[in-house]
Length: 532
Image (tube, rainbow, N blue to C red):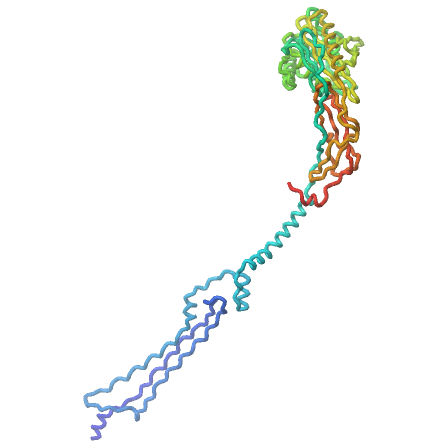
């Protein structure tokens, strides 16, 4: 019975389960940015530790018994339940999914909101305008200061003269009628004033020794001689001596027969021999001295003619002996207007005679000098060319010596030299009588002003009466010029600041102009407000 009871009773031994393993501690992660705008990131609470699983205590006495049959076996004990995994905070899941990247810098107001935990105020037009004003106003002030400094240190513009008086004057009456020659051609003009008229057809004709006027012009242009000086010394060659001994009575060739090879002749005396006794051998000597050969010099003569606008002139030799050297009265006057600007030349041509280096005296073929304020220039006579003369004269009008230039060509009435001199004399005297003066501006009249370039204007006045020189129906130009120097920025009243001119060329009337009041430099206001 006891044995049977023991067989039916199962003795259970309590099985101690193994200790549960602690779950790994979760790392603490602070998010760089919260999901909600304007909120400070919160540190997640530390993960709660899972409680250790306690092994169930089994009391054999209290263990339930069950009826066991001899054939039944004890059931294996149930496996303990696995402890539940602790819950993971949602922030950790988000943090693991977020890649930690550097964030762009926040605007100052957003950073301030983060620090104060206050959201930035909503934008408004007024707040935007104030914000822009605070940004741009200092820049505008800085630019204004820079611009003002630049304006103050910029160089001042150069003052200039501006004329307010009339720019021309016209003489009353009708144009004068001149006594033109009955044959050939003629032309008359006044230096700086223009032409008084012409007669005959202006076609190219031989001009004989009038050609030497161009030779003299080129020599004195390229080798200037001051008044009173002798200029360069020129070696006399064998050709000049040989040509001086020739006497070609058919063509009335004039030469200077006192020169010898090895001699030296001054430039001044060579020009005198050229223009007074009309020495052909000296003309050719000067050509060789200047250009190396007569051919090269003739080319220079034709080039110069083109420069002066002598369109109907052709030179083939420096003396004019060749009849193929041709021109017109008008073209020769164009040359004469340049010759009267050479003081040394007029000092020679107005002489009634000249004494050469050997002591021999030579008569000037231009019989108009020294009468009626004639200034001479050059005669030219050959059988084929007839009598020809390029002449100049002067007339005192007011304080000005007015220069006139005329040319008469193709006078064939014998004696041809007397015919051309008589025709030229009539034209010269009639032109001198036609010249007159007329007041244009009186002393003290305002004729213009100095413009300082920044709006300042200082009047200028004539320092003397201004008289125009001309003839009836002529219009002359009136100009205000600076006199060739720079106008100062400041000057006292009465300072001569320029010149008022009437006409052009060698006979131009010139009167200084002066400041009516002090010339002051532009002020700060003008400097700051100038444009350009």
